[in-house]
Length: 174
Image (tube, rainbow, N blue to C red; front, side, top):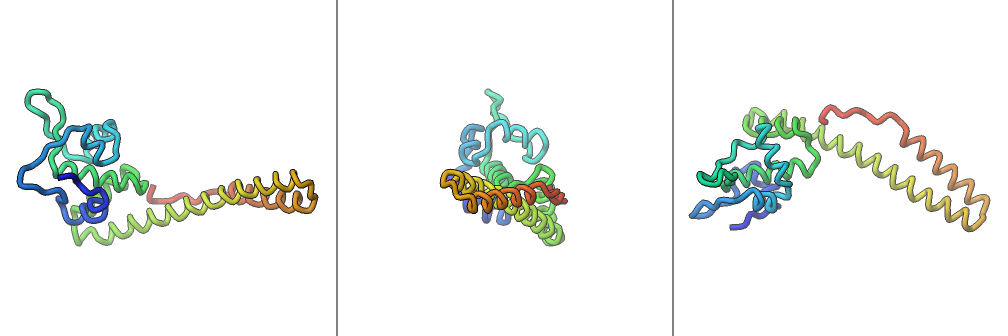
């Protein structure tokens, strides 16, 4: 059975195992990387730092053999990675999840802090986009030789440049 990445991202971290079949399937690290979207090196790293439980090894080849539960755990981490969680945030998320209801307040705080961090990143991305668009306006004004448009575009570019230089707030979640 092939896992559904979207279902695992939206439900797997709450409902436990998402991949189920009558015969447990085993996956190579290459298959796990393909399913999760994480590079093989990241899978090894997550195991080495304890984000993923130790992966069973094949008796003869000693290669990693991922179980369906391992796949679900890895895909859950891939979802956290995809939203920009740091390793420490991932650890905290997993800890809060394991705490269940008693970890709910901490989980909500972690997620809300991360949402704020993303909003801040989005704000600066918006400024960068406006800056690039304003530079294009400036060069269109140069091309047209319209002194009024050149001055207006130039002022806008300088204003945006100043806004981008402002100290960026330090987020406590990352």
